[in-house]
Amino acid sequence: MTTGIKRLRAFAKINLTLRVLGVRADGDHELETTFQSLALHDTLTIRSARGPLRIECDDPACPTDRTNLVWRAAARVWRASGRRGAPRGVVIRLTKRIPIQAGLGGGSSDAAAALRALGRRWQVRDATLRRIAASLGADVPYFFEGGTVLGFERGDVLFPLVDQPPAWVVLVLPNFGVSTKDAYAWFDADVGRAFQASRRRSAESLALRRVTNDLQKPVAKRHPEIARLVATLERYGASEAAMSGSGSAVFGLFARRRQAARAAGALASATRRVIVTRTLDRTNYQRLVGR
Image (cartoon, rainbow, N blue to C red; front, top):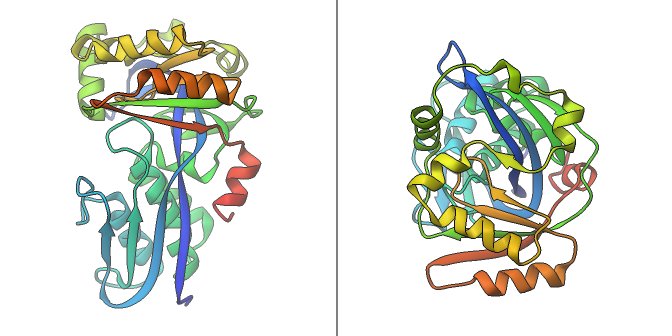
C-alpha cells in the first residue's frame, strides 16, 4: 500500500456542444456533447491518517460528508479492492477553484482524480476504476481522457477527437447556481420529451459545428442574465460563446490573451466572478494528471 502525501490536479471542463436528443428508458437524457478540458483546476491532497476516511474543503458550500462524489468514489474503490466496511486510512483535502453548480464538472473531476489516486493506493485495476467512474455520474468518465472528446448516450460513451486549436477562455460566473436536475426539467417543460432522431449527427459534423447548448435557452428563460452574458462576450470579440453544461457558467473563446483580458475586465462586477484560463489538450492533460 502506498503511503505519504499525494497532490493531484482535477481540471475543469466546458461543453463546446451539448445536444439533447431525447429521454432514455432509464430516465436519463440522451446526449451528444463535445467536452473540452481547461487549465483551471482544483487540487486534491491525499495523506495517510488513522481512522475513517475524512474529507476537508476550503469552500463551505462543498459538502464533506457521504454525499460528496469524492467520498462515494473512495467507498467504491475501497470495496473493489476487497476491503470491508467504510474506507479508512486517508484524509482528502479539496482546494476548490472550480465553482460549484456552474456546469464546469468540478465535482466529477475531483471524483475522477480520487479514483486514480486511491486506485493506485489500494491496487485496483484501471478497467475497474473506469467502470466505477461511469457508475458515479455521466461526466466522470470524461476526466479519464481530457482534451477534446465527443460523448454520446448520457455523455459517458466517449470518442476522443483531434484536439481543438488552443484558445483563451473567459468564464463568467453569475451569483446563482443551476442544478443539473433543474436545467433538464426546464428543457423537458419547454421543448418536450420526444426523441428527435433527426438531430443525430456524425462525429465529424458535430466536431465542426458552432458552439451550441440546448439547455441554454430554457435556463436563460429563468435566468435572463445568461443570454446577456453570452451576447456581451460576443460583442467583446469571442469567436464562440455559450453556457457550459447545465450552467450557470458562461464561456467565451478568444484567440489572444489580450482580447480575453479586455472582455474579462468589462464583465467583472460585484455580482459575478470572472476567470481567465485556457484550453488544455489531451497530451498535456494526461501528463498533468499523472496518467
